[in-house]
Length: 297
Image (cartoon, rainbow, N blue to C red; front, side, top):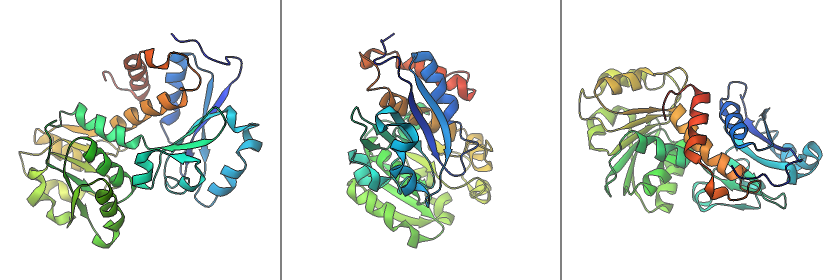
């Protein structure tokens, strides 16, 4: 186990968003920090988009110094709102325009990252998404998570995405994201999905719980690609259950939450642990999975 730098100091971290009371992020982060022996106190902070500017400008007052903050996990509706507050952002965030992770460096400066992409990519890889180059990802929805799925498609070697949406006019931003990642992109209506779904290498459903229930019985009975449905409560959705009944692999929002959380823990502890690269991250992942109720991950 690595030794903790400045072990007498407790660092602060939190998940920010609204509503936040049911977030499972504290469960997985606290499990990781307990195993690592890192003095990070992780809490929930209810924060709306309207409150974001005041919150970010009062961090030193709230925590004593921004150097005392390890980082923030960021959920809706703040993923775009916090980007202008960053001193620097990763290439992913620059391309996507949204973040889900804020890390405070040794100087207390906030840096923006997006580990949702890791969560999507690893959840799909876990579910045996083919690893050969090319092909397309089908994405249900056109919000921030859909944009993260586009980045995941690019990193998985795909060359195209198809957005299935209710209102094509709302797909302009993810279309721009796809262009920035060098992917071909099309927009189709949700009603088109059953006709084209078997042609994709993978599918990511980013719509709210219940929004795809009506599509479930229209799906083909075989030949479906791996699916990540980002919902985790209630689970399974009617859509995911029908997908799994066809014999295809299905990952849930808990898989995505776990793997994006592992990457956040790595980022939050970077300034606290010596020999950071020597940590047994597989065991850390298993402890976090246990905190979510997974038997094996």
